[in-house]
Image (cartoon, rainbow, N blue to C red; front, side):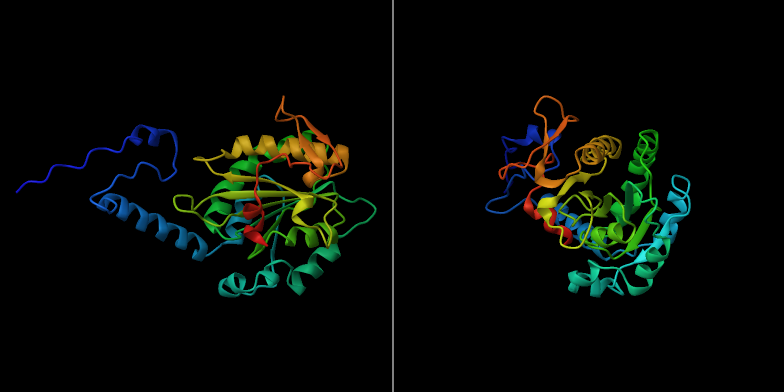
Length: 277
């Protein structure tokens, strides 16, 4: 007895436009075997991205050609399991790293910006996407007159750690590039989080984010342009977060507002911001 092949899903032509899991088809009441196996592979890649070892020294050597003598630091989370189980420890520097930054502080010449890179929840994202993004962004920042603090590469950091680093260096702005929580089919997605006047007590409402930075999402070079526009507006307007408005006419035109219903310039929902808390 021969079985007729299942008819193709009516939406199958849309798959060439998106990496979303649509038009999967069915065999009886179940997914086709091919889609089951694809799901298993994507799930395994996401788990591997979270558990993969992070080599900050190798990343520092690679980024050293873009920004001299990057600092390799660590959070208070001593290892990967602790980092995953204790988000609070990933949100602050280890004692040794805090002392290293305190020694560098010079209140007479505060930097405009400190850039922080961390594996977060995907070492793969930090290692793959941060170098090409910074290769475009750092020259633009220097050309625009930004005074840059030493580049900080932090092992096992959460997003809120940017506030402590920025405060210790008296930086006017902080930018954190951090591996986002992997989704199915997106194990290498980098997130960029920005804040004006980083300090203890900052909340998600004070930050802006550019998410899904990867070749199959928002390409690193394109993300660099968005981040540059945000940092320039923050420095000029002296604000960040929901108070910073993106023009509907131009994605690089940003204005400041104190209205309680202000939307941030990037479409980052609360879940995205909470990935690294």
